[in-house]
Length: 220
Length: 77
Image (cartoon, rainbow over all chains, first blue to last red; front, side, top):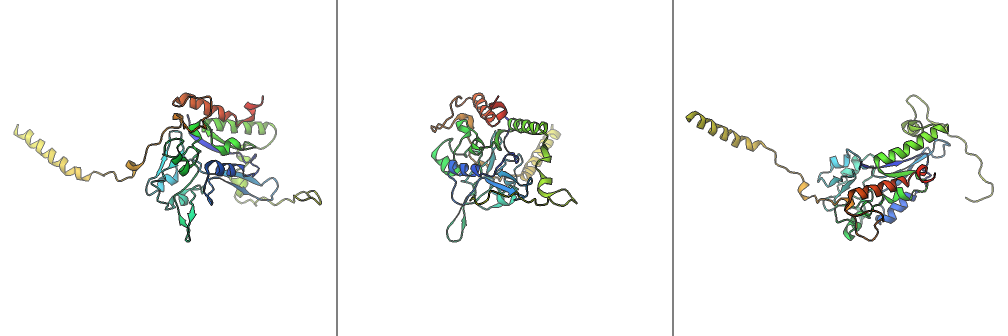
């Protein structure tokens, strides 16, 4: 088994936020904490508006693990980066180190006391016994131990977000890109990446395009 | 005989002195609890059918099968 990974296909993501809602519901994530969120760039620019669903990417060389002063993180044999909330001191170093803003902190009380860190677990719980009440209350559902994949990926309506064995999902994504290329569309890094988001060096950013007129008199 | 005894004593003293130079483990690893592998099953009443808890091969097959549900090119033929 290779490492568990997520890929979000920006050509398919329709910014429905279904993954965000499913994650919150499945794991009963506390108020104010979003383990997953949808990020959109180039709003209103036709052809350039892209959305991607972002959560913990379960990095192979995770910066959160590197900076944690109490070493509460661990990596499972499946390559999932998890943490032990009984060790976490809620210092927030991991949130500064993470390039995806994955670590979240529940706030409570008058002065917004920061609680223990909470993040995407790839629906694989934590160090408590698999499927136990204690595990669910601290980390959410352990779907991997139930023989399932993360709920966000499994319920994605357009299958933009795919998750699972890194080799398998890479093959799925590659097949899509090849299909697009045979249909005359750009593929790979030409579709979405650094240049789409930020333009090429010395080149003007994509100009806004006028939106076509919508239906008259109707409410959206 | 006397020379070899002297050598043993010298080596012992040197090792004794050098032992102070070693780094003691100061991490929190000892307090970290081991996690149970997902293929052992969750036993929570929500288990997917089609695999045997405790059998890593059948768990991997079930996960790979569900992986293929994410691509229309293998679902719709």
